Every structure is written in structure tokens, then in C-alpha cells.
Length: 391
Image (tube, rainbow, N blue to C red):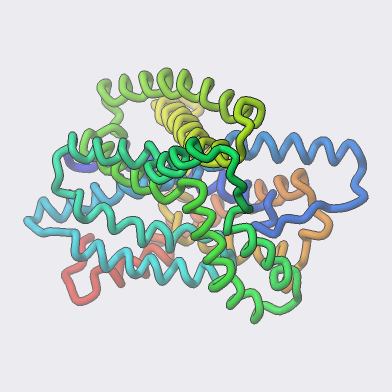
């Protein structure tokens, strides 16, 4: 199926939506420098908690899931374009992922929570499944979405429900971060983020089921591309309407179970892996609600024109993601303005909204003058180095 402008437009806008939501979450977290500002007025403390809870309910664990879904879709579109020229894109794509890994390491110097390096490594899973039949890929994606490792841990915990479990391994790495993130030395932040910070994120991603979830979403995104689910045609719109209804019905009990789990399960050993499974499924269900709503609302009218503002941001997602790490770390970390000391979730949300608006305006301005964002252009040229570059 050849790519068309309407589909690419909605995908770019959806990717821009994910970038904005990531920006908002990162800001209220002080880019993972967790700090509670003392002596705030009582009303502001209440408002901060409401904003924090609402932001994580809407976007926590969902924004990156949208990104993962679109990552697999992009792989399909790029592979298909080269297949039309009787070329196998997989080797070139492996090289492309290696370049992305390099971008991720640079991004990690400023923000240790970088997802690019993880996507670059996990993205290799697409290479062996690219030629498999839809049914086989769907079965693999479903098996991964079930969180197989967490089920093994749960089975062991069911046999030993009274076993004492320690804190997650990632916590010991997170506990060391304030020592260099609150300091005034950028030279200390860089090695700290690339060593301690990366280990924290890798362990956290494994402990929370992100690794299996991302692999599954990559494959599902590839299947969505094969099936043309982002085309503005009646069949795809019917699919998203059914997905919206099914995902909403699935999310409600999953979220209720996740919320009540501490009261339902007394054993900590059982509760931890079960919580990982339920939270993962709940996040994916709500992510599908967000994606379905976005696609259905993008079908014409004033709201479509409003959502289309996000498309330039989505087309420059690599540049936008990279620059928000640099700007955000300067705003909140000790080597920069150090605003983590005085900003709660409410003020951080306003900062995030302002930064997102500025990024949208910059991307629109840039793309009126250039075909691609600066980092996107660099990634494209490096991908096709020593080869005939496609338009």
C-alpha cells in the first residue's frame, strides 16, 4: 500500500501530540529530578497534586506507547518504499538504528530518561519479523504484550507468598542522581547520566515491563501499516471506532483493579509482578483510546485544523525530543537555572505548555524553509551514506 498525504498527516500530528504530552510530563517531573518544594500555600499544594495525578492518568506510560506504535508503522512505510524498488531495507534499517543509538547517547548526556537508545536496541526485533505473515507477527506481539517474564515471577511468588522482597534494583541508582543533578557542574551531569542514569532507566524499564511492551507495540505498529489503519477510508475508521469502544471497556476494569490492588492482594511478593502486568495492560488500553480518539477527530472540521498544528512538531520529532532535553535540563538542573527548588507541578505545567507552543511555532517556521528538521536531515543523510539517497 502506497503512503498517502492524509495518512502521513494524521500520523505526523499524532506523533506531535505524543511529543507535547511527553514535554508536559517531563516538566512536572523536573526531568526526573524529583523534589517537593517546601512551604508552598496549601491551595497550591492541592492544585499541584491534582495536576500531577491528572497528567499521569492521561499520559503516564501512554505517550511512549504511542511513540512505539508509530515507530513500527514508520519501519513498515520505509521498508515498503524500498521494496517497491526491489531493495531489502533491513540491513540499511539496522544501520539507521545504530545512528539513532548515537543520537540517544548524546540526548542521555542531558536527560538520562532518554528513550532513543532503548528504541534503537529493541528496534532490531523488527528485522527478523519483517517478512513474517500477519498472523505470526500478531501472535508474537500478543505473547509479548502478556508480559511473560512477569508471569514467571508471579508463578514463583504464588508458591512463596510470604517471601520478603527488597526494593527494585533501579531505586538504588535513582537515589544517587540528586548528587549530580542538583550540583552546579554540567561536567558531572554528563558522566552521571551516561553511567548511573542509564543503568537506572534500563533496570526501571525491565522492572515495569516496558521492554516486552515496546517490542509488542513495534510489531503492532508494523501490522497497522500493512493494514492501512491510518488511511482515511471507511474500513480503517470502522476499526478505530471499534477499537475505541473495546479499549475503553477493557481499560475501566483494569484501572479499577490496579487502583485496588493493594487492598485486594496482601502479599507484596505477589502484588509486585501482578501490578506490573495490570499496569502495562491498562496503559496500552488507554493509549488505544487516545489514538482512536485522535484519528477519529482528525477527519475534518475545525478540530482537525487545530490538531494539524501538531503535524510540524511530529515531522521534527527527533529534533523536538532532543532539544526539549537540553532546554529542560538547563531550566531545572543545578548547572542551569535550578528551578526545581521553586517550581511545583502547576508552575511546571505552565512552563511545559509554553515550551510546547514555542516548539510548535519553531517547527512550523523551519519546515516552511526546509524539507526536514535539522536532526532528521542529518539522520537521513547518515542512513543513506554511500548509497543512492531517496527523495
